Image (cartoon, rainbow, N blue to C red; front, side, top):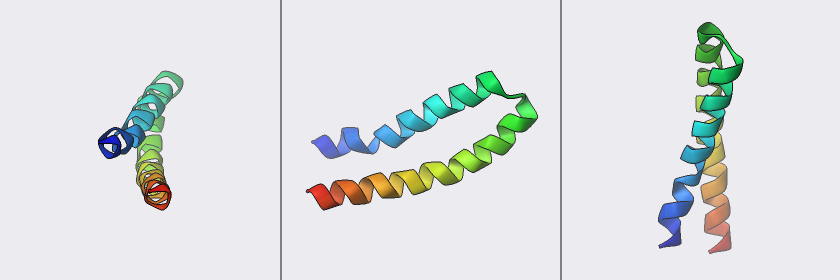
Length: 56
């Protein structure tokens, strides 16, 4: 049951990063950062999920 809530954590983190960059950058810069964040989002998700597997 904890797995479901844990898996949504990267999405929440990604959302807050999007808000941060929307506030701080113009739309052109935001598009570039969105590409960078997409890479960071998936690598972070893999890292967190592998860490969770290690704990269980």
